[in-house]
Image (cartoon, rainbow, N blue to C red; front, side, top):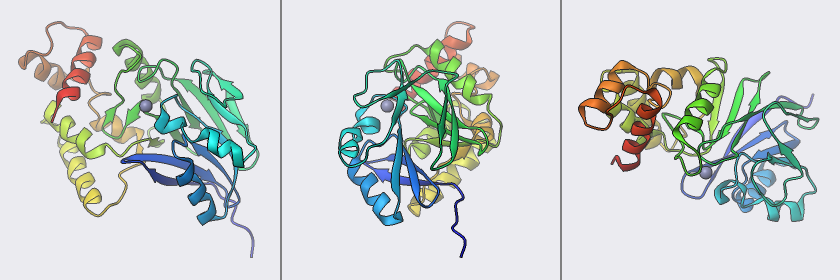
Length: 262
Ligand SMILES: [Zn+2]
């Protein structure tokens, strides 16, 4: 029987709601954001895979914390953001860099997407139409602004929104239902958002992941890609959260509202 060498992306659940993404060809694997080494080792053993590379999006422990333990077992390259100090990185990356792996056979383009953290990067597999965006874009939402400004985050999200519509969005957390509950509050007249919330709730009720999503789905329903929409601006103004006509201020007001939304 011929060996199936097609590339696959498998979700590894970790902590409360993290997804670590395992990209493999049924023999070799690259892991994106291994916050939990034990969970990665278990998945490698289950699927009988050899680890070949580690890819990091940003420095938070739930994304990079498993690197030292994995490196004790696997002698593999560690790719990650050049603008963040993460122990173990031997291939620092900036926008425009290309990661070329031979096993699994994969090319990834690097985008700088600061905002959640100062040096956050994302990986785009252009041939496969995959995006690994860490905590920058989520299904129905976006990451908190811990180290960057609203202006930086809008620029980062616009770069991501410019990817082809059919790009699959592999974000790092299962936050979709709470994000879409907020999205419905921010844009109640968006029927697609309401439908997407119902679909996500039904999936979660059965314990099924709501990710990956797609770029087009995000453009149609994610308020953090839609902050220029008239109805969102009006909602922010009518609730006293926005006083000026400025898209960056609207984005910042939306992000602050989400921070306190229950
Ligand atoms: Zn993070």
